[in-house]
Picture 1 (cartoon, rainbow, N blue to C red):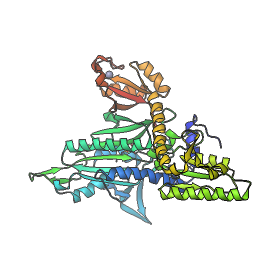
Picture 2: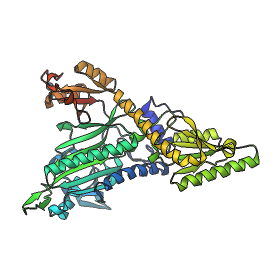
Picture 3: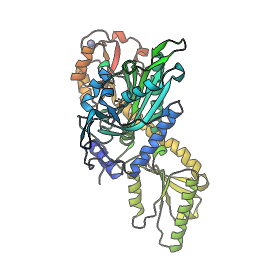
Picture 4: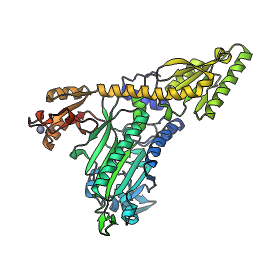
Length: 481
Ligand code: A5A
Ligand code: ZN
């Protein structure tokens, strides 16, 4: 097997399969894949970060049914218009036609709003911050891709919140953005935060804020979204509550979601020509120990003893360790095997390590070996884990930033997007010009929220390259997945 990340699409598919992260394209339903044990563990550790950040900010985990009656799904008209082309329907039970077709949830706003209308009666219950991590089903018509565009989105984290006022829901969107920033910072993934244009917001939302990242091929992937739903669902679902002043009112809602794309970007952004490079926090195996076989029987035994001692010591300190004692493989082929699987640290133990005070630790991110005093191993690995994340994060941010360019010229913008750059350009704010940019230049990602162009002042002095009128904002445009 040869890996070449400059051919990203092939690299990605090969790495997922060879590193046993996600078995895709073999299960006989299009757009659906299997998580084998190694990938499942990676997924589990990524989800632990997400759960921790949600639980510690007052979110509570719930679990709703996968089936939603057609009548519920259709209650909010914008919502169903957005999703009707993507719904998988269950129309039969055994030999019988169902009275009401049941949708495999494409997302759960309607299911949750329905129950909230039964649960919520008083301001005392607000804000209500719920989330679930479940599969959702979308009959995607664009080219499906493993973890990136699935029809069974097997790792869908959806949060749904209800509030007393527009402003409270607005603040909740801010909190969600802060949480997602933390998720991506802990994974070392760079992101842009873009206010989607009105014509590209979530079906049923007042506004949508998206996290976007640049994939190795220069195309942009939406890796999370935060929606202010206003009262769009609370009106048809009649989610009423009594205010402090005893007046009845309808709640204001938000929803925000992450998916398998979080894991996809960890793999895509950090990986290299040898395979995965996993942040230590989420690596299924953090340290692999490779004993170096010795000709001398006695020394060989001591090497194995030392390897076991190091393993036990590390495990006692909470590290996820693998001692690769397979006799049929050479150390070199073991290095290769574990590099492919993204193991952050490899400890090689031979005669010198048995007799001396130091161990040899190879770092997956640097491809370098360092010497570590035996008694400092735990401490050093902790320090190196922080350095590791910092190093891959910095590299990833530098790459993303190098892919963003500013222009005020339409032709230049087209050329840059063609070359897979993210373009920042002035915009008059008119939908007409936005749609023209969408059509002729590339997908309008929206207005950057991670960078304040107004601080440089003079946005009004800039001209919309489509119509020549004064600009109201900067927008980002790119080729997307
Ligand atoms: N209920 C809200 C949160 C919602 O459904 N929003 S969403 O449609 O934007 O989806 C949330 C996130 O899931 C998206 O930002 C995107 O990162 C991811 N996603 C959407 N469709 C996907 C698919 N077919 N495969 C993988 N990830 C997907
Ligand atoms: Zn214009």
